[in-house]
Image 1 (cartoon, one colour):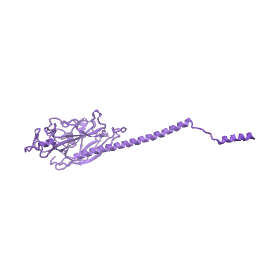
Image 2 (cartoon, helix red, strand yellow):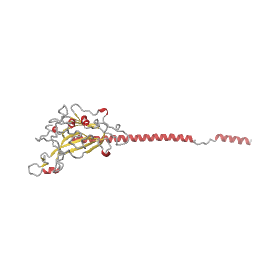
Image 3 (cartoon, helix red, strand yellow):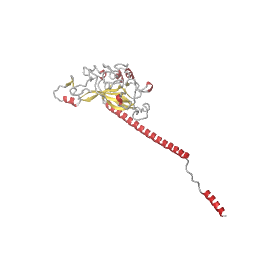
Image 4 (cartoon, one colour):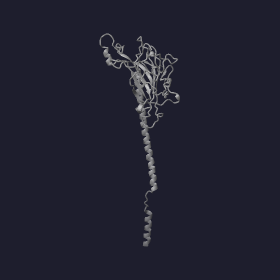
Length: 335
């Protein structure tokens, strides 16, 4: 009887006692793999979100810089007394529309021309906006006008315009793809160049040709009246980098309303051997000048984030084209 109870107790203990087992190696490997996949997916998602956020910030920052450059050019353009059309910059008189043509002795902004320095007009630096504005005389030159002799002083054989206390300066904005020594990270940039009449109180700027003719009348369409003794000097300043440097696809890029002249003209770029003659990330549409009326100018500017961050290609980094319309304030009694 005793043995019977002992045997039953052993059996009951075996049934009530749970078996204690651990994870197998296979189960641990499966858990580790699944966990790694989840963590990897989460990390990839976080990286993608951070990249997208950074790319969006770069786009916003680049667009903001393009808008600032557009505003800068627009504000200065409002001071212009004469804006050259794309036809004038291409070649003198080379158009059936005489209102768009110029009759000076040289093409003004044709790349490879003999007026502007190569750093502002070449196959990789193409003038887009070229205009005249009045600029106050430098203090050193103004001081010569206060001598009280009654006769205007002269510099370089020509009288100083003391009565107006200002002279005409030629301003050039060009689209540049030149990048010596990989100084710039963007595909293209905008340069600003200014040709002033006076370089000091004792000398005129080399290469400067005044817009007055022999009879002292102002006629910008006939400028330059003569060939300069030397190519204009000076170093342009970069206004903004990260302008789109990708030429327009299928040879089509940029349009202008009827009666406007596109600048730069595609013929001018092609004739100068510019390989990117379809590059329209910065161009203008200029209405012809007329006596007693202001000119209307449309400016278009497109940025590109390629080079500013890793990831997008130049084609994928193109931003929306910004544009503005400017009416010049300066009006001349003549054109």
